[in-house]
Image (cartoon, rainbow, N blue to C red):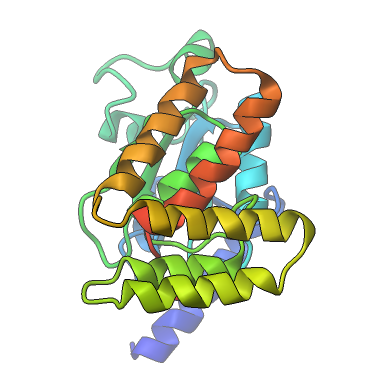
Length: 252
């Protein structure tokens, strides 16, 4: 089968799998998981009960909506504890089930959901162990799969300038000047966001690790849960902008 025919076949398969699923979420099983992963697009997979619900399920749905248009597939493997107990073999394959012992209904809320990223073109899959929140999962995909997302509080033009700024051999002074000119043309919330990109660029002069250090510092403070909600929101926006320096996207 030629490459084009194979891709058309895969597109048809994905269309069928997406039927009756949550928006932009592909339902996979122990057979189709192997058919979809390891191809030319990364796949982020949730392993969970057949019909998940609650805050974590809502966060995953929101992630799928955020990923519309991005070069990533968002998928779900439903694990059954009744009847033929579908996909329990998949759970065992990834270490979510003890060999020789079936998962029971009571196990589903204590063990799952679990998440794994299957990189494009093969390679070792990566388990996601962070918070089951849309922003956290989006940042993970942006970093590990090099996928561009327009995160909350970011500006695409400045995400590109951030990527240019951290490139090896970049003329940083020129990039800062371009950022300042672009920022002057903005107003309101966008101008405020743009000014942070510029400030971050200026801060890192002579401190090559400043972006990563500040990124980690703010994430740690947010995770600590001791800051006021308004302050936490402001820090989260800064983390999103800093991610464009920490995990620049070459597709911009």
